[in-house]
Length: 353
Image (cartoon, rainbow, N blue to C red):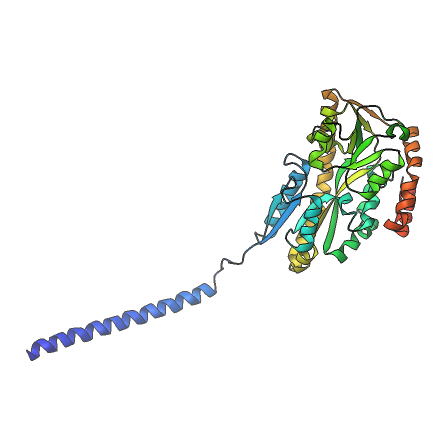
């Protein structure tokens, strides 16, 4: 009996000894593994920064193409530290709602017409002054230069960071009658954006401006709620306004520029390197977007003409008559926009024609 107990005790001691050795080896293995991990690369578990980028154009537009290019470059250049979610065609609300979303921090970036910011900072409405720019070359010297930066600077105070301007194109009129002089607008109901400068422009020409949401313009034209409208070729083409209007008049009276801006609170919170990538990439995409719009506008114009719409350009004499009729608009908004920046812009344009 004693021998049996002793044998069992001996076996038990051996088992305990073996387990102790194995445990020690396992512990040593864990330490070795930990030491090895310290010297190897680790996968970051930090969540990427999401950029919600909203705009108001269709998914077939050059604006969507440029938004996708911005997304591609940002995600590539930040190594996945930032991801871009694109919301086209007013998916995140009206222009005002998108702008207010940036102010509240619920939307990081938007790409919208400068005219939509008129109620937030009047300096940006300088772009919408009638017959201000003689051509696109002069326009981009203004917008891409010091005057453009000054136009954007006032938005900081309301929680928005201006980054850069994007091209769309000079606007054309559409109507069911020919337009050659300001008097031809007398009594017409013209659809406009809810932008003070643009509404005042039509009042100066004798028309009745009627603000209508962009999505409702086609039906408003078709049903006679309004008699005509103004837009660049992209909007006239993609929204098929030419289907319910007999004439398109190439007035080049105003340029519809877009504006890439960001929530200032969000933008300022970014690490320096990411903020620089966002800024540099935006400028790069804005420049390439000009080429996209130039080619697209040629196609839009051809398609509208092929449909059977009568298209013609105002003569230099007709443009001059409109410019003279527009002077009350300059007088009305001179102080609102800022006499200094308006005079500076007019002088710059005169010197660079």
